[in-house]
Amino acid sequence: MNDKDSEITATVLRERTRLGGFIRRRVADAGEAEDILQDVFHEFVQAYRLPEPIEQVSAWLFRVARNRIIDRFRKKKEEPLADPGDAEDFDAAESVWRLDLALPATSDGPEAAYARSVLLDTLQQALDELPEKQREVFVAHELDGISFKEMAAESGASLNTLLARKRYAVLHLRKRLQAIYDELEM
Image (spheres, rainbow, N blue to C red):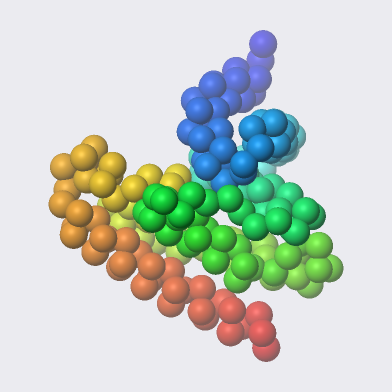
């Protein structure tokens, strides 16, 4: 096994549980969730072997997973499954879907695919600009679906502190993305 294969295997083993949980929280059918997970890892293997390295593997995997989930729901014209009984998870799922609804669909032609690519790149840059603790709270809540209560228990930070960190992150991201939206609409 060469070095790249070893790195791919280590990444799959490290990310499989968390990524699988992320997908299963958003897809009702367990078989379909597993198919999406396999698609994401298949795309990862293909992309990893390209000459240009993937900068932030975990973020890249979650972005691809989110896109695959959205593509499947668009094909079936179904709404994403969320349990209204758990308001915090529902809010997190809704935020991810609202983000995607703001992005052009890849199936809408080359201009839309380009706009989506620019927006996702800008989002990644804006996330990288955030202070570490703000970025961690935003990613944990919005992308990983971790509740504020769980984060507070793990980190020892108060609920209000975590909420404030996320608020500042959202304000920064909104400002950065608005500029790119305005540019793309011209």
